[in-house]
Length: 281
Image 1: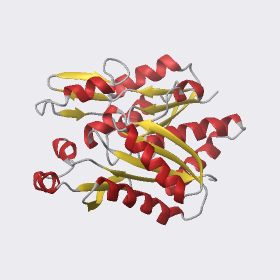
Image 2: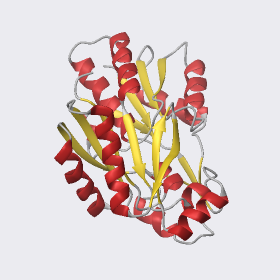
Image 3: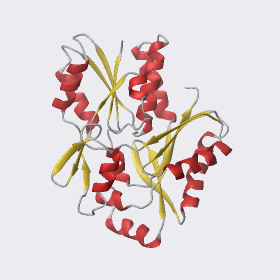
Image 4: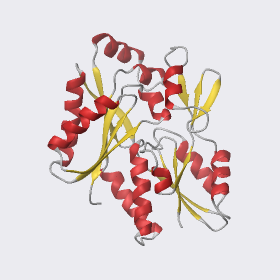
């Protein structure tokens, strides 16, 4: 059986990793002078409690090639093939670290690194699709072709409560962050060419939800889509967003997932958004 791994930036419903048989490489998160690993020694609730203190600035890092190599060796036997689906190489060094581990293991295990050009629920949706395609008899080459098509068509659009965490993580400048906080503006963030960029700003939470729904509608029209509603500590707004989206879109599946700590560290609490991809790939 094809072994599948994703990195810790992946967002997914509870139980997906077990159901679809993929493993998760934890991403280190440094808070103060201590390094944590989601799913190992810190929960989302603990993370949000810690970062309530502005002095506890969270910083994410890529897992080392050694850590990745050790995990793969634990999962695999000599001769196995591993598909590693990773966060965009433009946003993290994780993909490069996996490539290094793959090179170190090339004489024992066939590790195939795949750059998703995205993050969040995209990784989990890709991993599920890879497992389902394998179960249907597709070859690794055919699975990679499908993942490449998903990468071309998937859409990620989010609205942040503020740019404070993006500033603290170095994603935006101090002036931009201060202005949005002072004016109570809600930023709209869109994935494009492997990067998350501020694509607009609106003045209310309601307007921000309307804006991201409109962007998805503009992209897909009446095409059937699978959707993930992602959020960080804001299930009630995620519920509202789901209803708004399903009122205007032809959705064949809608799942909820909380943002992983490594993603929330850069976007902050009360972030909500939509990950959408065509139903037929």
